[in-house]
Length: 307
Length: 288
Image (cartoon, rainbow over all chains, first blue to last red; front, side, top):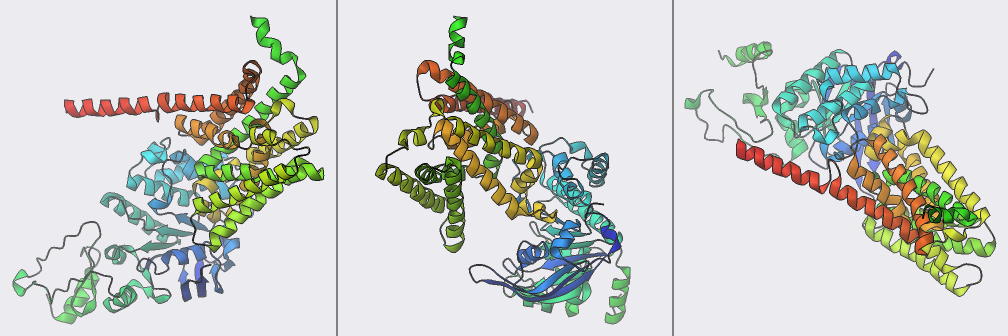
């Protein structure tokens, strides 16, 4: 029995407790970071550049070793969790050398390496799972393409397929929507929701605030430490975000803006590439669509005496 | 005419030179695929120069030259890693400082104690005069390198392409890193015998770079590079009999010629293909 077998028998969770990370130059990147996630969640990891998002990813993948504290995945130390293929990583586009001589198929098969033997020769089972994973992200017809010949959205989907092929239970996604068209973004979100229903943990590092309430059920806010963590509705508040982002965010306050009563609800927001994040009266998050949020609308309407 | 072509093969030293060159050429070419993709070309150059003091000391002490060379090669690699993490210098500056320091120390040693070591044969190689124990050392290095790369090339491929994924799969990128560095030092020592310290880097980069211009598949890249490395080394050694010229010069000139051919005529990434694509795009744009 290879050591990679049977990861499903452990209750899934990420447990980060009191983690300090110091780099060789003495820079303290993370201090006393603590949070826990249980299976079946899409969790946003939100913070400014340099807040320690990537350091936290590195700690979860064992690339940096915490000076204090510990990280457990499904109750196991990181190295053992990796040996069991529990963790997959979908890199940021800038980290990948797109001219590398590998095809879509080669990349997806790389997800299976941990399940293969010493010589890493794919068996029929590995090929079947790789094919199935490519089909699931709708990229099967591109399998012979060199990876540089794909669009931004297609590239992202290939690396997602690699994570699927790995059969990982924890998937770390680094800025998954940068350079991705809207349709692909929606397709990726739909896939992440399916995986959540299957009990996976998705930890999504992003600075794209507007998309967070749309698809993440939990949020970890960080700025050199974990400022807040928990359900999106509780953590993703104006107050917390101001704490996390300080003076970095661009503000558009409607009560200070030229928006007046006669505008009614017909306010339009346009942004270049990032979704705007809109807070309503009293600091609650406004969602892009009412569909699927009828209960929220109704509750707020009752509370405000609005119709 | 035809009989004339067979003349070099009648000499045992020529047979030996052609055979050993071909083996080294093939192994270096295999390794060159990883070196070019990992961006370690400068590192290859550095290690091939850093082994020189080791060769000098090994000759005085009567050790196998490979042992000494290997030791200083690794010492230089570790030294470069140390200086890079402890200072704010960029990698190219670190490599430049460290490898020239080693090479200079080697030159100094050889010029101070000029007894058995021939400076020329270290710097420019002397495959025609290679001794039998040296042949054995080269073949052992080549065998071990081929074995490790042949069994584990997929792991090294992931390490070059996406070290984080290697980590996520439970592989240890540090182990892969130092294994590749070790193979690089060992192979640099072997290639030193054929083409000399100055041209080792060509053997360790050019075949891989040429193959990279010809294909988008790693498996094919390895095949092409090894075929080119083996063939150019054998033919180069053979041809040097007629020119009475430097064997290393012949081999590397052939490899460079193949590189230029690939650069111009490569089916997809060649200059002509790129021009044809541009013209086609222009014509398409005009028609539309």
